Image (cartoon, rainbow, N blue to C red; front, side):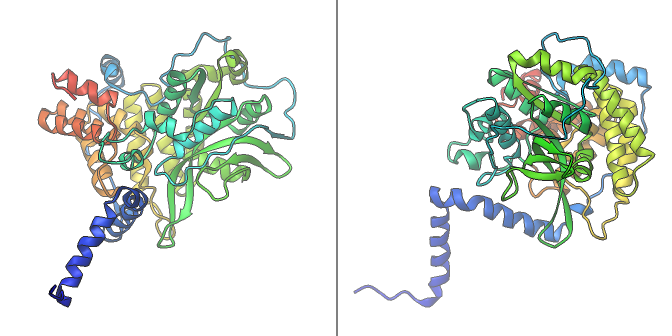
Length: 447
């Protein structure tokens, strides 16, 4: 006769049963993101990421000329923050002024809406899929994600769970995907304006922008996140762009008022991406005019940032100074960039947090400060910024760009083992990631 289980054993047996059920693949795949979200909220409750502040601690030790020479000598080690693709020769740049007035409204037909739901950090794959599907590409968001956010490669986990730690896909990764994995073409530029977006739309070319997105977090405070937004039309009578928002429910054919659109776009230095068929390149270049030249676009973005520094107020001033730094980085003016970022981080520390959190995810999406401080030989600032980003703004240190730059800075100050550890850590987030692979191979190590 079986002995009756004493009540005292019910709790541990129940816990073991629950753990066993949780790790069943169908259950684990569905619950892993929710458990991670709960874990993140608990960590953020005790250690609010908005309270983390990075304070630059080094003076610029280099002249502008020396920094530029140093950067050019080492540029092979870097990922460029702008488009890495080499465009086919196009027409001579001309002013981006249309000879005929733009129509009052444009709605592009044939848009296939793709959301990012039931996935994790899928904004980039969803938006580039919409851009490609518009031109007839037959792939889907998972096809994109397998290349741009492949995750750890751990065979014990599902593909979605493998990619869970990768919090963001950079714009250049999306552009490279199009140019290297499909028959279509893509480019990105800084310093866009709404008239240019309208000109592209009026000619039949939708646009992806990167923007800041504001929403209330679970505590009720306004939170800032980075977001891609597929723009497929506009209506001057209604005063906004027609957008496909992969995040919202519903997110199809929404109207984004012009002031709101521009305010969010400012957070990313007015960056835009265009995807188009290869045989339409001359037409796209004609519309872009001066923007065909990356250097011109970066200089234009710098002029916009300088103008906004004198015109915007409040928290937007932080974004303007940050954009100034990003534009200098795109121009390989690293000491000037570092000075601008110093000012931006100073303003960040004084952010009005009465109603809104600091944009603590900024370094999840934009890595310009790492370029600026590294190529100004401010290696300790690179390390300190990466430490703040990895340890204080995120629930787990899973940002491959921050790990990579910290590793590079560690190597420069002679801490090779710490550098190696960081390089290997990146590959647990993004398997076979070329910058980390190259960094290890340069040290005679196998990834």
